[in-house]
Each structure stands twice: as structure tokens, then as C-alpha cells.
Length: 305
Image 1 (cartoon, rainbow, N blue to C red):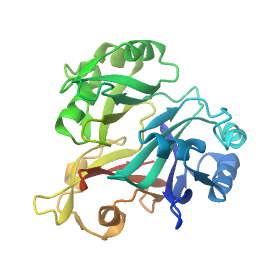
Image 2: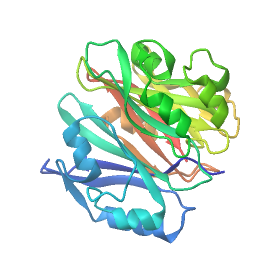
Image 3: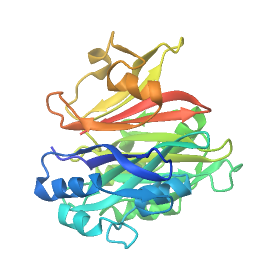
């Protein structure tokens, strides 16, 4: 099965704090030598503030979607084209003023791949509605048209619910859901499941990253949300999606991660995102993204692909 996410990188400040270097990455093993060349070149690069996609994301302090990796601003444009990468989503993870890492997810230029990636923002800060900042929709032109003109009120729809609850939210059966404002478009394009992740970079500024998944090409093999328990001693599975239809609640029942236990606990310990290969059957790798709100870990979102 093909997935919307093809590769994941994590860029972190070097020891000087003036440049970003590649700290971890996973490039899907099934996508040929050109993607491996892209990976090799990435390992030798670094980005200053406002340089390249990671550096511009660092300066902007918000998630960005670049739908054209052939832009002169993208330093690896020739390699991206050869590797068949069309779009990049970058997400900065901050603890207050300090950058912990920039996650970059890449999506392929493939007619057989469907799905959407969005960034929603409350542009007037105090305003109780979200509007689309950036979006990638592939061939789903009607969905793009509607989304670009849509206002989503606080607590409504997938992004608005994530904003209200101040935590990642997964919605299933979007084509039939009264809680998904674009259900008709979801039905037309086969969009079934969505995940929305809020990032609060100031008290007034919310950016909501939403990924919309189809049954034919899901966003990832799995995406999961793990949260601290009430004592904030363990991370427990909260909700998720599995392309194979596995019951994740049953699979993870009784499993808990302490700080620094496994990759999940490591992300909780230091607050830094991680991308890495996977030893799990059917999976080539995963990226772990912490959601930090007011200096505390709210959740860890895992995309396995």
C-alpha cells in the first residue's frame, strides 16, 4: 500500500545554536536510489535562520507547506525532483522562545496518491475562527476551492475541535460525519479519516495542522496519539488509525512508557521530535512529534509509514 508521507526529517540547532543540522530522518526504503541520494545530500547540509525550508520555518515560527519544491528557496530542488517529491510540510517545535526541532514531512508527485495537508490559523489572534494559511490537495481541486474560502469557527469541524480541546484530534468516517464541515467533498474524493494537531506558539496564536487520509492512500500506515496519564508518570495510548484495520486500543492495552523508555519516552524526556527506521513488521519507519503547550507535553503524535 502507498502512503501520503514518503519521507520525514528532523532538523535541530547545532552546538552554536546558529544553524540547523539533520539530527534524524527516515526515507522510505521502497522509493529507489534517487530518494537515497536525497537523503545523503541532506545529511551534509545545514540551514541558518531564514534559509531553506527548515530555516524559513524557524524564522516564521509556524508550520509551512511548500507545494513547489522546484522553488529557488528549496536548496535541494534538483534532488527532490529526481526523487519524485512534490510537497513539503514543515512543523517547528518550540518550548517557549527556544526551538527544539523542525519536522519536515515530504509527499510524492504521484498520480496514484491522494490526500490533503492543511495549516489553519486564527489570523486576527483573538478571533474565534480559523482560515486556511497553506494547503496541498493534489488533484482534489473542488476540496481546495472550498477550503480556501472556508471559515471554521472555534469548536467546529476537525481543526476547530482540535483548537477548542487544545490537543490532537482524530475523526473517522468523515464523509458521513456531521462534525466535518466538508463531508460532501470527503465523499467525492474518498477521504475517510483526518487528524488535526494544534500548535500554540503564543497565548493568542494557534496553528492547526490537518492531514486528510483516503482509504486508497492513507496519510501513513498508522498514526497514533499518546498522552501522559493523570500522574504524568507514563505515556498511554489515547487514539489512533491503522490502515490494516487493527484494533489499536486492544493492541496497546496495558502498554505504558516511562520517560526515556523507548523512543516514545525519549521524546517525552527531552521534548525533541525524532524520525527513525522501524523494526516493527510491515513498517519501514516512523516520526514522533511532541505537542508542547505552556511548557508541558500534551501529547506525542506518531506517524508510522
